[in-house]
Image (cartoon, rainbow, N blue to C red; front, top):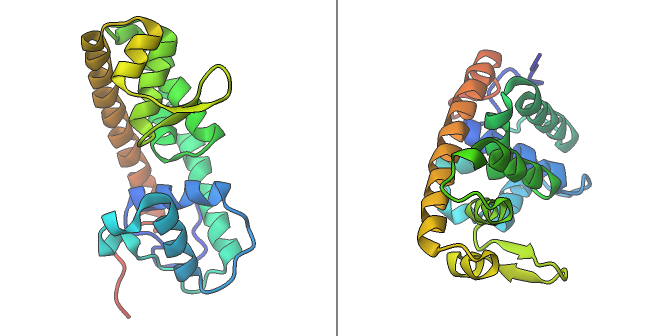
Length: 203
């Protein structure tokens, strides 16, 4: 059961809660300075804070130590794991996860959506999905070197027509967004009920 440490909402939206929760999973635990400044600095470095609305940038960290905030974030990640069906969980992991979590999400989406795609080359499906969920996706080639994936790259590497790849990418993108939205709605009901997410009231 999700049990917030503070009585007032910590996050404004489910998306913000997920962004911060999965960011906390990969950041070192020892930080200096006020928690709000710390979070904003992390979000700026990882997500381009300027693209977020002022509302999305705000957190209610009053009364929460950095360690307690990390505890709340761990609970949020556990909710994704425990309360979402596998396809929705894969979509959320693909969007918000980092490193191993994102990899598992992408693989899960391809496992779920792959048979629906007009192109059945599994490695090409993985490359397309990875590129969708990683802006300017950089993935290692077979020699461990990093490279940017594009439809042209994938078409050349896997000998699949670009038109077919485009159709496949569109299908994966549309279904992935739908699964992500349904998953966030499901989590939103839980987070609203427990008071973790809600409108922040000015002091």
